[in-house]
Amino acid sequence: MAYRKVYIALVAVVLGFFIITQGRSFENATEILRDGEDNVFQELKILKEKNVALRREIEDLEAVSSKLTDQNLAISTIKEEIAKYKKLSGKYPIFGQGLVITVKNEISTPWVIDLVNELFSTGAEAVSLNGVRIVNFTAGIDTLPQGQLLINGSILSQPYTFQAIGDGKKLLEILQLPGGIIDRLEANFAKISINIEIKDVIQM
Image (tube, rainbow, N blue to C red; front, side):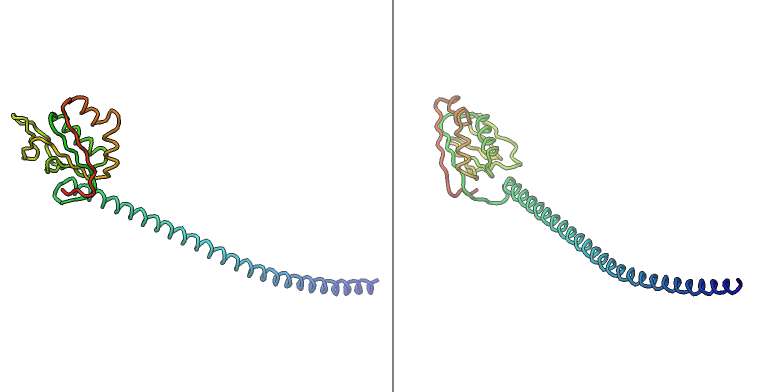
């Protein structure tokens, strides 16, 4: 009986040894596989991080490009505004295409002002009356006792010649619209004479 117990114990020890050895071998094999997976996942992780970094770099470059575009637009707009105010100031000679409007016979000062305002509102870059530019510091147009006009210290008499630099065809089209300024002038002044010419070059 004791012999059998010893025998069973020896068999148990041997089986245990094999089980432990086999278990360790599987454990080692598993660790090797996990190490391999870890390497692959690590490489994938690195690639993903690089991809994210590249996308961020692209986004940053696009943002910079957008800002540069906006700055260029802003600079361009500022330059246009400066050019516009230079023209309005009258301190710089300018030239370009436009209209020449000659008005003879009767016309009152308020209508002269209306015609000047109409030219500016329809897109004229600069306007002059009998060679005197209407600029941003022009106080107004006054009527003198003998019917002449006073503009920027200059006395003007008929006929009145309005010059407007801008898109001549567009200006003429708007001025001659039914019910426009020309129709209203002719309706209010029976003897008025209005002659309009498109000029390739007007200088002020």
